[in-house]
Image (cartoon, rainbow, N blue to C red; front, top):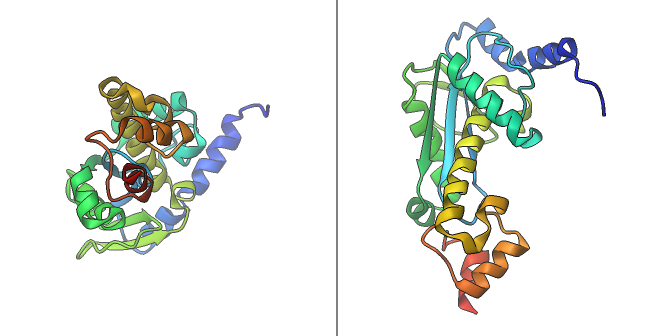
Length: 215
């Protein structure tokens, strides 16, 4: 295993601010990142976060939440909410996902997350999704959670929040293994739906759920 180097990590994290730095060069001062967790899950809300970080704040090991262990995500979560100029996290419920579709529900979640910030940004970076924030300038970045410090921070807030919810769901509905699969369509989860049917958390508009319930 490669030994962790603070110097190398500081350089890597500094590079994550390149999009934010370019925005500041154009005169923008309060720059937010927004990302979601749970869009591909079969259960529960989509969780969307927005974060405004201080300029060039060094957060050790900051990265796309999917690349980090649960322990490192939890540590970073606490550091982010402590250091952020402002952050927010919202849940878009199952009913709204089933009514709108998950893509539109996520767009709505990003608008709500940004609107919920205590301090309104003048620029927002999003992970791949093009969102209309009204008068606020925005730019979507493909794989933004791995390329932008603000989006990476938002991805961690959203992921940790949703994983904590999944741990609660696992207690409420133990048959589905939510503590392991987080609601995603693993073989274990799909077999449980086939055997026990759905629970109130399931997204009935999603084909894997819909098709299994037809059997």
